[in-house]
Image 1 (tube, rainbow, N blue to C red):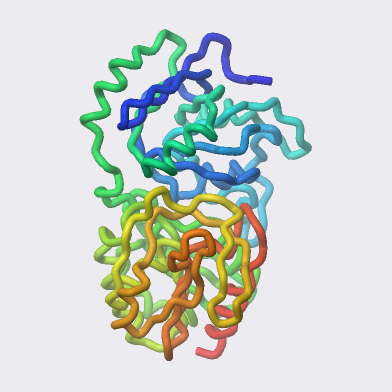
Image 2 (image 1 turned 90 degrees about the vertical axis):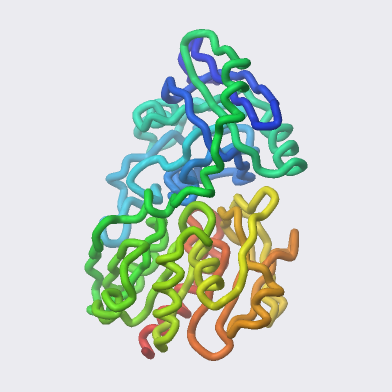
Length: 377
C-alpha cells in the first residue's frame, strides 16, 4: 500500500545515464549525491540518521520499507540518548525503495513519508531496487540526481546536470557532522571516555554509557593535548562519512594519542584513521559494505561474526606490514581488512559497528574488552 501523495513524481538519474522513474515521497526537492545500496531488512530509522551516510542516496534492496513507521525520539536509553535514532536528524541525502508500506506498530509516531518531508529529504518508491543494486555492484558506486515534484519531471534536464556533479568524497564531510564544542554525558562512574567525534552514532554513546562511563564527545579537530587534559581512561575514534585521507587533523591527533599507553578504539572511519595514523594506506571499495549481515572472521580464533557495516573505504592489508599494526579480522565475502590491532599497545580498530544499531549483537563484547583495558590504564 503506497503512502506517497497522489500525483507526486520521483526520478533518479545515475552518472552512467540510467534514468529511473517512480513515485515520489518525502520532500519536494532536487538533490545530488553518491548512490549506494544497503541490503538490510530492518532498521531504517537508524540507517537514515547515521552520519556516515552524509551526502549519500541510499538504495534499499529489501522490498518493503516503512511498515513500522517512525518512533518518537522520546523513547530513550542510557544518558537520555534516543534509542531508535543514531543522530539528531536524517543524514541520508535521498532514499530509494521498492515499496512504501502503511505502518502498523505500537511505537509508530509518524509515517516515513511524513518524517522525510519534515526533514527535507526526497524519496522515490516503485523502483526495482534489486536491479538497480546489480548495476551498482557491476559498475561500482555512482553519483546521481534525485528529484521529487508534484509536477512532471524532465529527466533530460536532470541528466544534463550529471556532468556538473562533484564527488562529495573530495569534500571534508566529517566537518559537517562533528560538533563544534565538546559535549558531556554523565555516567555512573567518574571515569571518562573521550570520543573523537567524526560523526559518531548514538549507539556508540549508548554502549559506553551502559558501562557507566562518563563520556565526552570532542570535535574531530580537537588537539591531542586538550583531549589528554580531560584525563580519559580510553579514547574512541568514531565512525563518519567520506574519505579518511581528507581528515588530516584527525589523523595527526590520533598519531599523537598513539604516543601514549591509553587504550584506543577506532570504529569504521575511526579504524581507517587509526591505520593512516600508523602509516598504512586506505583505498575506496568498488561498492562498499552496507548491511547488517556481513560475515567477518577472526584470524586468531577462526570464529565468524555477523556484523553491521556502513563504509566505502578500507585499509590496504599489505600496507600494514611496515607498521606496528596487523590485520586480525577479514571480510569473508571479499577478504578485505575488517579489523586491525597494535602488536604491543592496547589499540584496536574495526571496520564494522559493534554497537549494531541496527543489527546483530555478535561483537558488542568489543566494547567490554575496550572498557576493561581502559580501567587498567
